[in-house]
Picture 1 (cartoon, rainbow, N blue to C red):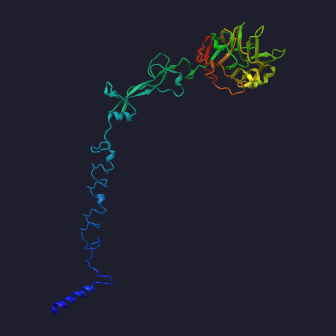
Picture 2: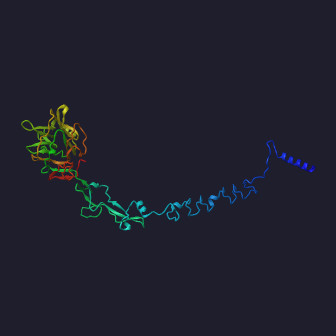
Picture 3: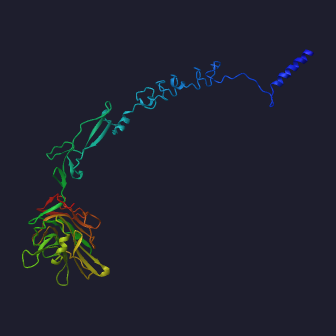
Length: 430
């Protein structure tokens, strides 16, 4: 019993020796915490031991040198489809799932071709149509292809190239019908190595004229303009009133517009000035009356200032202002007003006649000499000065002759003319 009590006391002493103020302190053996210098470090520890060859968690050499690693090793399995940098770019990679070879139809589309499922021959399944080249100094509007303006090439899948005969563009008026050979269109001619369009009618001053058969549309009413681009030799003008256009014959005339001509200013033959006029006849109580806007010697300086050395725009406008009970006839050169006439009337209009309209000629056997480009008769009118431009057809156009190698009317009214001894030129206002 005494021995038992002694043993119990010893045990209590050990118990209290392990307790501090806070209670019992546990005593445990030192942990194996991956000290690489600790020779007692557990080599089987799989936590952070960098010297552990079997450590699969934090081995810095693991993801770079392990040949079986399929995550980050660039030298890993060549058939790996995850991180092999050559995998997704090699179209020949047998196990690559992203770069399967293109089908022929896909190759055709990639080459810019058209695929034909129903082609008779396999080599014709992929084709493209090539347009003939238009030379840099040419305009397609004035070219006529002798045997088509395009040709066909076929795709050679074995060599990834387009095959077939190619053609070069060439001007050829010898009758050769080779593909891509061309001639000038009927409204153009060959000049200076290119097809240039006809755009003006040339009148010789002795026999040239254009005649347009009568049509009721050519009988004008209360609002209208006659205008044209005209080119004359201003140093060699006739003393005759050279006609641009006239409706009616010698005895039964309606309206008219003249080109520039000369008139004597005094007794001396050398004392002359340039003159221009236009107007119309209307029915009076007894005989026809004439309503004319014309320049005279007093307007000579204004007219000279308005004239250009080459092409000039000449316009004659007539309109009525009901609020003023007045009719106006105004004559312009290059948009500048050079003559005007007015009268108290709201019912003035050119006389209705059934005679033909003539261009470049009057029934008095007077012929215009020079070029006319873009002659237009319209229901529009000019009231103020303006800047003239290239003329065109609009909804108010009665007739428009642009003289592109014919005297045909370009408006929808079809008021075509017939030329006599008239030629056509590429010398144009525009």
